Amino acid sequence: MELGSNLSAKAVYDYNLVRRAVEGGDQKAYAELMGRYRDSVYFMLLKMVNNKDDADDLTIEAFGKAFKRLEQYTPTYAFSTWLFKIATNNCIDFIRRKKANTFSIDNPYSSSDGDEMTMELRSHGPDPEEQMIKHQKEKLMRNVVDKLKPRYRQLVEMRYFQELSYEEIAEQLDLPLGTVKAQLFRAREFLLQIVKKSEGSI
Image (cartoon, rainbow, N blue to C red; front, side):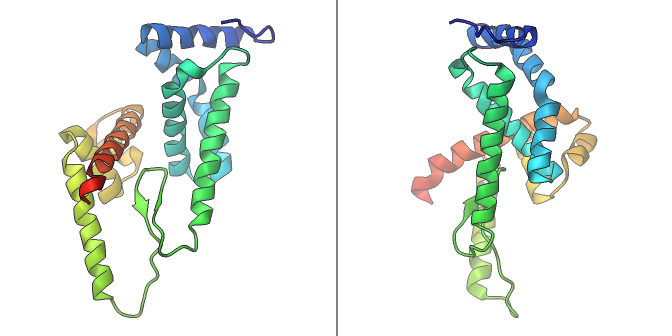
């Protein structure tokens, strides 16, 4: 694999980290790559979505997608260029999904959190059928969450049922903010796998 002649010293250093991560499964290399670009990816995404929580989620998603595809990276251009492209494309998809479903009240869509959501119009009185469907969806979601390991289940419940911020969760559990975000990312992956396995029986 040939290094691009236009690569800077910084890009060559990144490439060596990528090789360590891919070839040796070096966790420190993954952590260093994330540390080098997390802030710049976050601030780029924040400008695009103008929402801190969404930018946080999208940053974690971008690194998750990049690390999964790390073997596909070729050093004809800088790792940072490749990473920013993944982050930007993922963010554009997120914005499109949000816009496409702004006025859709029937079709469910997946948010960046992996949650299925629908727009709800408030009627003058509660519709018994709607209430029952909503209750069934909540029960189903609870059943899925209950299949998670206890530490992931606790994080998901705090984030999505109690609607606490990342900072509040970190404070209550006495964990570093980065650990909370990384574990929630893993929890969402597990949830998605559980939902996919359950689709046949739902």
